[in-house]
Length: 416
Image (cartoon, rainbow, N blue to C red; front, side, top):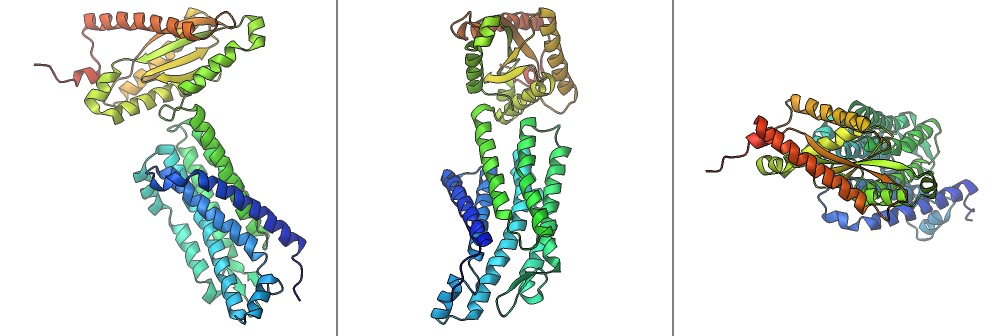
């Protein structure tokens, strides 16, 4: 007689089935990634695939019991108890394997997301492989040693003393990933740090719960939560963050200014803000003389300078090419000039470091905008642009009189 599935098992089946459907939806959104050369997308898809298998196993093993429907089918077809035990063994081997693999792949994903370097990922894949190798050896020798779990002749499953090793390996990768992010926090875009770190938190908690409470099947659910959170974060990021500079993009700038101009509270207050258009000097020579990859690096360095020096009260966006927009509540010219001097000092510190073949410097122009007094922000942007152009022309004439040249100009071949 087939006994009904327990309430706990049914709840587990429902939760993991829902998680599986959600992961399938996310996987369908990444069908085109199979032809992509973007490593973080490939690693994300691998994590999705592992999580789908994990959810399936957790749901399926709640039904794979000798008193449930699958064992009855096996008995009716005279397949035998050995097959029942064998399938149970394989499912558990896969389950433990996926748990530890997920932490390893997440570390590689975090490394790539922070630095965008496949070469760095390959190097770290070798450096941090010891925990996963050790855990996989213990898992896949379990059918012969019984170190991680045992399945009796009656198909009764129990976890053994070394069950903690895969969980410890997963926790070790979490700790390494968070420590790596923290150690490199000053070298990467700040907006990347918290999403990458927080995504792994549910997995860290789940690994601890599963290690302390044998029989608890929670990893697949927390992995799904993490991946959904990661997907939402990256989608949100791509909608309003300029990937190269790490500041807001043109789309978000337009939405920001539109929302500001339509704010009823600010209209009543007659709120006034200042906009600063910032243009990189001699940027074309960087691209022409050193290549566009060096030009991209220069854009990235300017973005870092803005993020590190503007503070929470100011807003920065990449307007296009080598132009950036700063929105600030500062209204008096002395405060604005002080802010620009701070950015100039930061650029000079970059130049003096000797790390880069180019020099960073800025031309800028600013204008003020009173909410509700203009139909849109076009006139505001034009005033900034006109003032910036005047500043650039005057600066160019001053440099010509002084005979000043940047590194990128000096690298320009003489025209014969």
